[in-house]
Length: 528
Image 1: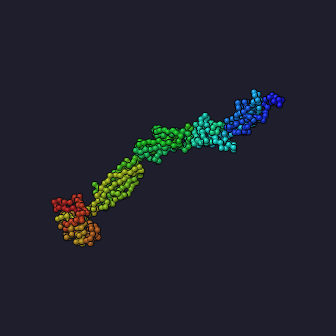
Image 2: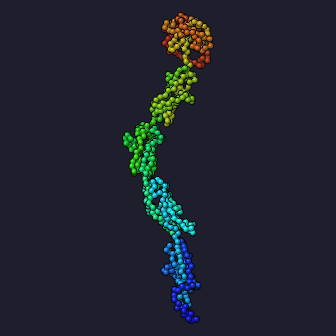
Image 3: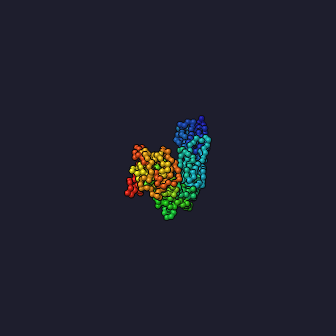
């Protein structure tokens, strides 16, 4: 018994025994928490517990405890064991050593690779960066955080493994890289750098246009010059010029292929030739010349008529003339009778337009015209036209009153007599009706009404074959032999009664007759 006690007391230290054991996982992944536990048969007898990795002391505890690796790394792989000093009896302590445990820490994910949709994009293109890595199947649910960088500048950080630049520019050229990390940043790896070279497209195909489109500008309105290019990227400087003076009208710069320059309050002085230029640093290009014509909008047109003092007779031809002297052609003129449209006339080279009417009594009323030349329309002032029945083309000369005398008719501006061949009361009745007199009374000879007709005065009607119902002598059938002299001139006597219906429809017409009163002769009654 004593011998055994002595053997235990003086046994060599650090000898592996079953009294102390080690418990630990065989493998782990980067970032895992790894716990190494050493315990004895009676932990209460442990005075000091020491943990070793690869023969190196890594931690010492003064009681039975565990050693925790909170964030496992590849370098934590290796052999682990522990030693303890336990109380043998009284003040005698012995050293116990555990068996060896092996830990292998696996890589959670490899260093990511940066994938670029285009390493040599053209300015304005969309470029996508992807940060690609992979997780082991056992940790496929691990959430990774991604960051994208250009040089030392962070472009994006978050859970998305891709970053899209909707439009890349020349100054975006440079080295790009990305980083993948766990949510707590316990594991982090960066990609290698990828260089992106952004190419600029020189400007070409400069075109100068206007809004509104076309080569017309309207006085008093706004004209917009639009300069555009077919191709060209990056910052482009657009400039506008007047060709004949080389005057610079304005300049705009930006990342666009189309720019506008507004010119308010256009007037006649703005007519001329214009062009624009575009330059994005690779050479200036110039547009073709655009000739601008300033079009003057219509003002209030002037409407006139060919009728003196706007008085006319039924049967006359009336010319309505509408004119705007300043409006730029082409001008479209419209003519109106009250609210009724008569028609329109287009004047392609400017000037006035005319509209011809063959007048009837119904043409009395208000007239106006309207002019328009593509910008606006303007109406003239209204004129009022009075259309009367034409004066009778027959008269009774040198009688006692206006309804008695020698019968004379007018043809082509000359007055002549009527032969009394076949002259009867039916013929006189027509004459009386045409003159607005009363009933026919007699068919006297015309020669009794002095003075007699002049020798050179023609005889216009030889025989009038009236049936008595005609409205005018000119409507009666006639025989044209003309062998009468003024000694056979016809006369007529009518009642002087004037029917009310005639008064309502006719106004008295005072003829401008040089012989309305014969010298030293009887009173002459001109026709109505």
